[in-house]
Length: 287
Image (tube, rainbow, N blue to C red; front, side, top):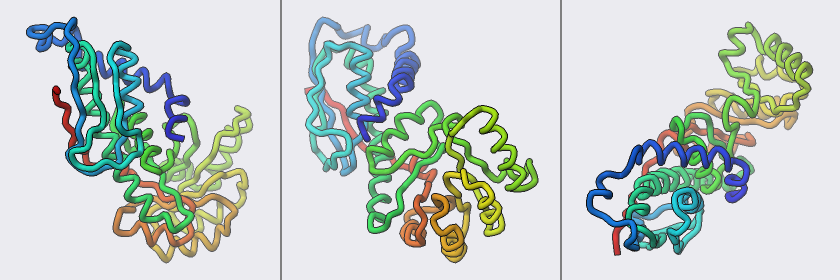
């Protein structure tokens, strides 16, 4: 699954790398050009300064491939491995200028992706005694969505929709604009028939009455229970009775995720995975 992400989103990852290098290098790394020689080969190493689930190794390989294939990476760990303080993660050997031109992008990505993977792994482990799975959301850093969602996979979570284009999620705003769940889903059904589309449909509900309206539309894939307390969640799970997948979302954190997962929902989704993680402290140094 971890490697499948790159295969599925190669185009998007390559576009991210291209735009990120252009953003940082611009017309040239004038600091390095002023004092270094790209004909001289040097070696640097990446060291972890704290314990974490490492993520971003495969992305680093892709960055190197796009910048200069003569740079050699010797990795001591792989994405998803647990590393401890002072552990060596990889060595890089190559032309000085090219190494420094990608240093910050590599470090930024690995620090952030490892933060996402570490938080995801921690929360996934908390609910591992249940059948509930952890989902991410669209609450990602602009232009950094694909690495962040890749890191969720590495940490043991699952990707929800990648964007507005790969799943239909009927949210409260849609319902309020259309006046009811029923009127919204009737329009959605016409849209699906007209476009001969079998794209998955997720419906956000705020109470039991809205859930009941969903039963008239058996083609719905998943019902999202939004900001419901434990008692409401238990009643909703009982009412749905496995007719649809069930996702709980809204104000879920480390303190209440276990109790929510134990209500019997199939998924819990947390925006925090990609907007409230802590960057991991890593160091690149010349050896």
